[in-house]
Length: 222
Image (cartoon, rainbow, N blue to C red):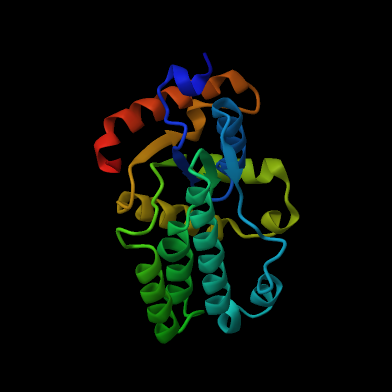
């Protein structure tokens, strides 16, 4: 018996992994997809025509970038459900408006008019009964010092050059966002409870928690 069957996880389940930079979303996505024999869905960055322009001029391109991300994530969400589910998704569509677009607005790199247009578009596309929300959002969290430590460990150049204050602000925004999130059920996991890189077998504990949560919230999906 495989882990999916052992813990009564439906073959058509859609599980989204969320959390700030450095918490191990991609590692968790890969481990869960292998354990459950689910497909994966990762964020497409290489084909984004606005990303380089955005880093050159936040104010000019933030709205374009966010609308592009929204359209791509919406298409990907539709694709996942057209497949019939059975997916682990790295990063959710909800983080774009709840964290990143709001941060641009708060910092003045997105105009009030653009922010209102973007949030109205998001609500019309996503916050409706017709949008296929995930069955569960797995939120990876941990103390800011541990998160920054992980960012330094993986050694990505652009991240190394980013000031700690940015990661601290992002960490706070993620916590505020998840504390008010209600689009689908949430399972919160402390990143210090598991180390899937050193001990891959620990994924079974995560799968067991996912199975229990899906069972407890099954009435929400009917």
